Image (tube, rainbow, N blue to C red; front, top):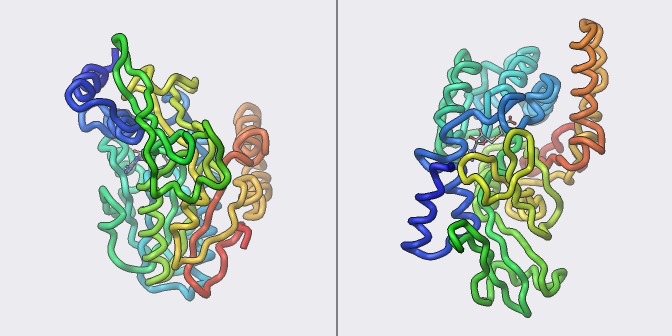
Length: 354
Ligand code: SAH
């Protein structure tokens, strides 16, 4: 049984139902029993896999895209190279290896990692230790300097609140306790100032999601990039605008009910890129670009061919499948999207729609 379940039950008994955001935070980051606190969830033996774990090409191309932005912005002599939620450190290791080919870049870079999980910090230390990374609990603690930042499948782990339209007000979806189990409920109708702009474009019974931490983080990234220069590549699954319930749990590569195994399944929600874009000012924001299109523009097919020349048999088959998985619209190519932030008056990072 989930170690978190009795604690959630006690919390709900003492204080009443909790918001979906609070539930997500407990499940993912509870200090003793949180999903990320207690394990490395990635890879074939874990619960889910991510683009950098599928192929080295992903991290290489993202690294080179940031490197091009660094060149375009006049090679700032000292800058912060940052990643949010680096997982096993695979993406950054691949990015750094590709960046070695850009003269002067690594001498100018200071590596900063924002990571909540002690288990994953240890994995990152093993892979990235040579680059003397500095870990942080929060983006706010990074030094003020030009910022070149990557986040892959980070924003989807941030806690969302869910609201159901009822008349011109909203009922918040909450997690309570009913007949011996966790169960979803709804609060009474109340107006929501933060959702006034959603009254146009939604109707009775529609569910919308908000992610205040994602907006606050994007605002902080945008402020730093506008003040000091830099660029950010935010990669995740989601869409332009949020509509509908996207809360999902994944365990052992299978979808599960979000309330079934608290703390033992990954819990995510789709990213609303429109809300992130709106929060990024005064930095510039790219068009939202499909991951497949982005990687093709960066030359993934040429890179795939070069790597394929060294491979045979099963390794070659795996490599060809990886290329398809990352780019094909029926796989990760369309659902995953990239939003770029970049300094006022500077060039759009390569691969992205302007
Ligand atoms: N970017 C990696 C891992 C994605 S999983 C990859 O693509 O493989 C999500 C990552 O974000 C994990 O490293 C997790 O521990 C971290 N994370 C989740 N919520 C966080 C939070 N609130 N603060 C810091 N890190 C967080």
